[in-house]
Image 1 (cartoon, rainbow, N blue to C red):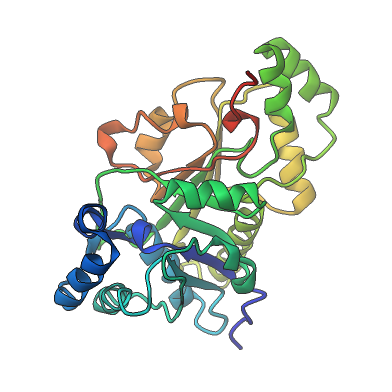
Image 2: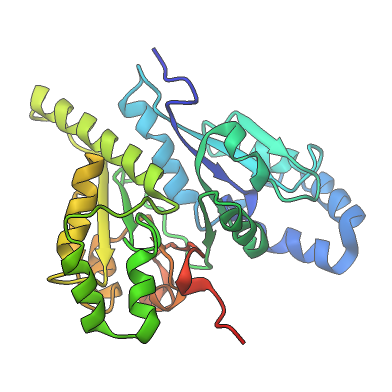
Length: 313
């Protein structure tokens, strides 16, 4: 039987992340909400272009085709639009064959407050204020950064990459490092606590549920050696030995793992990202998200923890 929504991995996505709303947003800025409404009504049947999160969301929904009995994932549209102005978004989703049936239209207000109602493990938006407000309320959220859209129809695999500290795990260790910007102090702390799992970070629940789906795929492959996996998860962290052990301890305590894990020791992450080619990459530090090769990797900023707090004074 299909999973109830409480058991599903649910992603809430804003239309600003899913589609290219550049022209629509400019009308809103230049002429106000009334002209924006008329503009959307005039262009009701003009299909919106793909946004940065579109390739990720399309493949994420395809997980239900792999597990048709369970339908373990769902995407909910969470929009600042009114139902009237949101019609164009709904028609565009139908045009692209996106299986998204649930939506919340909040008419000018931020929709993040409704994340618990839909059991959402992530809220994706291109609205920085909405994402920061969600994180401040302890909800999982990420800001989609501008990039070139690459959506190869022949590429059916879903590749998701995560930073570790401040994304999957809390920012305890990052706080130790930031205190004096001392790498030796950081390594000493992590060595001392290598057997102590981290507390969950904002995207821990999303990572856990994706990892469980990997296990379902592993079972499917054991039953059928010809089964081709569609999901790959990577952790790409600036940590290296000896601080790597606490990452392993944490994931093991949660009963999860990644397909691929990279301990880069401060090396530029794009060297790995350009090979792994994720359909989305989550990191809490903007400095790790501004050097995408050719701007083709969909980057998401998770504005959580000490790395995103303004210095006192």
